Length: 125
Image (cartoon, rainbow, N blue to C red; front, side):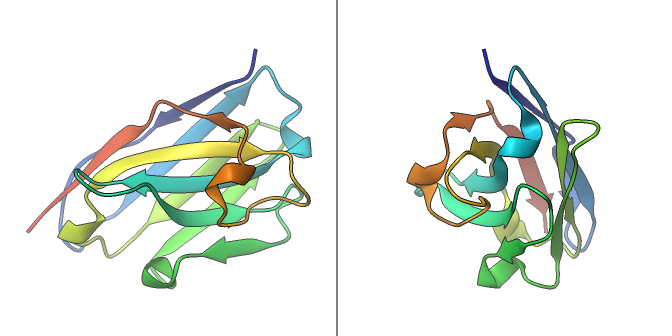
């Protein structure tokens, strides 16, 4: 059974950095595009960043470009999200997801087959 486990969330001051990790098990990791999404209280889940199966293609939401970097290590079955210059509006639960559609890593929520439980990121002003 596929399982995704996020880690690395926490409380950070505005301008700080965090690195999220998502460890996958129970699936052939290199066959899946990976994505990071987030959901703030009272808001819909939104796309943050995605990466293709090989890691050759990445995609970011406009508000994350230049601040966030997604990467993956297929040997470790892990995807990462490096978050720099964090803002209070980045406060949310962050979820990783795995999708087998196409090359993967796109911003379409329905293309993802498996989801983690999420990790809380709180940015204080």
